[in-house]
Each structure stands twice: as structure tokens, then as C-alpha cells.
Length: 276
Image (tube, rainbow, N blue to C red; front, side, top):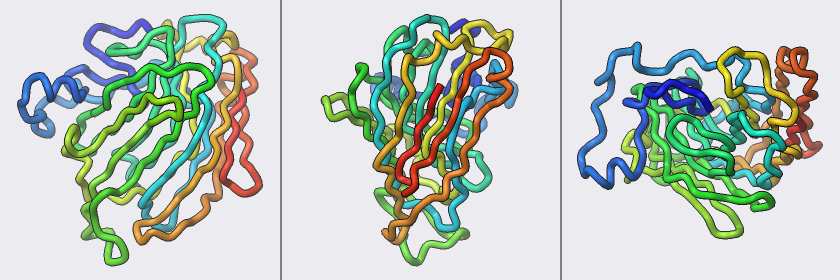
């Protein structure tokens, strides 16, 4: 992935490396994380390489705040042609869409890690303009991934929009063994008052190697679609609820390269199929 040396193409856009933090960095230095807004806005989130980075997704605006989200999917076959950065993920955002918690499967190099292999990591774009990710782990085609976003400490029934501090944990694990976690010990900003009300049940994000926005060649996508299954949602009080997913497909990219990205929602709303 050809990004400039000072930037990382995260699942939420192009970000200056000074805003990216990892478990290894904190463990090596022992120093606290940078204070919010330490760096000028011009070094924060940048415009994504291509405005149509999200190729296909299923989203839902919940009426109740999320307490836990769990989803499973299989690591797809590798792309037949190198040269694209691919993200597959589920996640949760606050109502203002200023923060997101997401377990992420990645193919390609994003400016700080990855390559022509599958990597699993957890990401948090925080409200204070910092980006945190867990230690990436290698996974293989056919591995079954379970991604979770959950409150591990905080109020439940008495939680209100004005007074709700919850501590979150993001986990991405596989039945075959590899796993990675982002929690408060790595990312202190995961203790926050934001309620998670905008849910992403499944998403495909893809960027071309060149920044000219000419689209992704069909051979640069994974050689198979991805089915997100066993989607389970509970609110902060522990009650289960069902999302009425809204399917979205980027028609602009289809027009450019002829890809037929589609989103199919299962009858019981617990399965989402992304085809590309």
C-alpha cells in the first residue's frame, strides 16, 4: 500500500503516525499516552485515499445503548492479485460517530503493519483524536474469527445519556488459537461516557494501491465472499435485541470496475453475507 511515510491508512481513514498507538509502544517505554490534542489538527485524521472506501456494509441505529456485540466469520481466501488494502470488520460507534470500536481482519500493508497476508487486530478511534490498536496476529484462510465489543465495567439499568461511564474491551479471537485484545490496560480511553448506538454488523473496506481512485480490480478482492454469522447483541441491562440491518453497497465503485458487491441479510437478522 503506497502511503506517505508519516501516515497510516486505518479502518477510519488516513491518519498521521503520531496519532497511532500500540501495545508494544506503551510496553517498551512505560510512558503514559500522549495527552489529547497534543498534535495539531492537520496531523489528525486525513481524507481517505478514495472517498468510496466502504464497499459494502450492514448498519443499524439502535434505540438502546449497546452492552455487547458478538459476531463470527471465516477468514476468506487470499486475493488472486496483490496491491489492495482490504478491511473486513464489525463494530460500534457512538451517536455522533466520533469514536468506533472494531475487531478487524486486514489484508495488505496499511503504513504501519501488514502485507500480503491476513492479520487480525482490534481498533479504537477515540473521541480525543488518538487511534489505538492491539497487537496484530497472523491468521489463515479458513480460520473462524469471533469478534466482540463489550462493556466490562460500568452501569447497567441506571445508565443515562448524561451519566454513563463504561469501560470497553474489544476482542478478536480464532477457534484455531490466535487472538488479540484491546482493553483499558493498553488504551485508557476505552473508559468513556459515550453510548454505542450505531452498529456495524459487517463491513468491507478496500483501497487501491495507487491514490488515483480508479477502483479495485476484481482480482484484488478476496477470492470468496464473507458470511458474518451468529450475530448477538445485548443492551447495557443485559437484554438481547435484534438489529434491523440496513444494507449498503457502493454503486460508484461497481460502475468503475464492474464489481458486484452485494449485501444479503438473513431472515433472522443474525447472518449477513458480503459478496464481492
